[in-house]
Amino acid sequence: MSSAKNDAFSNRPFNWMNSADDCLRRTAAAPQAQQADLTILLVDGVYMSRVALIRCESYDYGSVRKAVEKGLELLGGAGAFVKPGEKILLKPNILSADPPEKCVTTHPSVFKAVGEIFRETGALLTYGDSPGFHSPKAAAKKSGMADAAEELGISLANFYDGEEVSFHEGIQNKKFVIAKGVLESDGLISIPKLKTHGLARMTGSVKNQFGCVPGPLKGEMHVKLPNVFDFARMLVDLNRLLKPRLYIMDGIMAMEGNGPRGGTPKKMEVLLLSADPIALDATVCRLVNLEPEFVPTIKVGAEMGLGTFDKDNIELVGDPFESFQTPDFDVKREPVKPFRAGSAVHFARNLVVPKPFIDRNKCIRCGVCVNVCPVNPKAVNWHDGIKTKPPAYRYKTCIRCYCCQEMCPESAIHLKVPLIRKIIRI
Ligand code: SF4
Ligand code: SF4
Image (tube, rainbow, N blue to C red; front, side, top):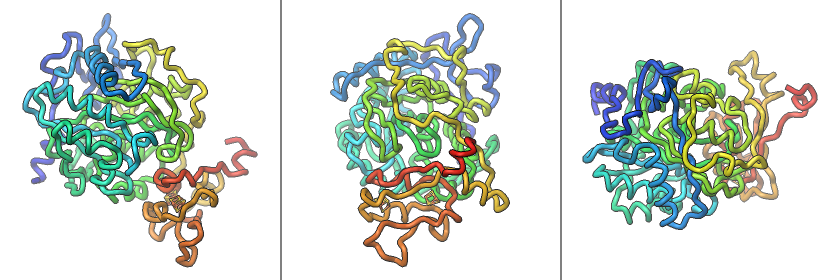
């Protein structure tokens, strides 16, 4: 793909709002929307982002299909988001090769229902994700996504190879390497999973697009952007570049605790739909009694114009918000501390930022943590090459990206708040 074509990709317009409800608007004049194209509602002169919450009690396919349909109707219907003949990429969360019952990945029933409905609009569908560790094909197979895709008759897009795309409007990143399968599409429908995250409290709509960056390049970005807020700005830029048309989050069985891979399934029975990823993620936070501003992508996403988390600018539709509230959801309810990278502060940083540590009793010595650690030399590695004991950390060089905790298949890696931080309570 030529660089001119890639420039065209980053400048592609929202030309798909062909049949939306009359009140659907996108505007550069809305509050905080100068940088982004937002799908919002003009209600009594106030710009609102609409979030639909739909109850769905199980992954029984018929129930899921009805719930997705109901949610889409409240947003103007599937036809409001795609035109017949357009190439649309479905982007579920396929973080790793795990079965659906572990709740690491978007459930294949949700993926299939979204696919079936959008296929009926005449869109030409593909799907894909770039997992943190396994190959896209292996992860799609194990997660059940490949079987669902086969039933739909849609193929896995190329998430192995990437091409550089310039993004002149980028605030944190002026260029990205994007999977070819994404570049070959006209638009994205993002299908994230409702889960906790060690680095960012919650993962959701905004983070889901990180899988559009192929393979090991994701690790390199952690090294380049060790500050969690810079990393969040990069994710927001990525969303501003890719401009997913709609986000449909699977929160039927969510994940709490040591997410995004090692947490515990939690029944929440909710699907959330919105064209505003910040409003959607903020609504999830409110459901689990977490301040939206504690999640870096929400805070900087609003600042960068990707959406709004202001309650007054979010219109909730569908089933009652209160009926989904889960105040006992296991999530860390405190802000993420912004630490600047650099040698002068590295010592202090190491003293106060939560450290990953390995539970020896849970560790199966698989080496996934060693493989995914992006720093060179590895900050978690086999001691003297001995693979019969759990790997060991070198905290001096660890950048606290928590990729190891994110990808450990046994939930053997936890984050420990250093004693000094507990004492001085920062
Ligand atoms: S800590 Fe987890 S990822 Fe690392 S070797 Fe043990 S089980 Fe594998
Ligand atoms: S040891 Fe873990 S947290 Fe530290 S740099 Fe490596 S992957 Fe990131």
